[in-house]
Length: 100
Image (tube, rainbow, N blue to C red):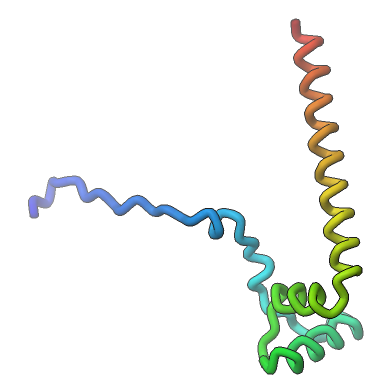
């Protein structure tokens, strides 16, 4: 190959799943911050028979063991996000109306 030739790198593509993947969920949950966190890490580790527990593992076990709690959290998060989106949309309409 000629030293002066351009070397094209392969284009990196990701799947839709990877685009929506949250790296925070893959983080290991370390004990020591609070009694409740220690309990959750121990409980999930015992339930899944794993020494290293991730945030995602805790979320999955919480969803299976206490779905009402996880649903309430998810619903509140959705509603806050929806309200934020509406607020942003109204601000854009107001801004565009003033600029004309």
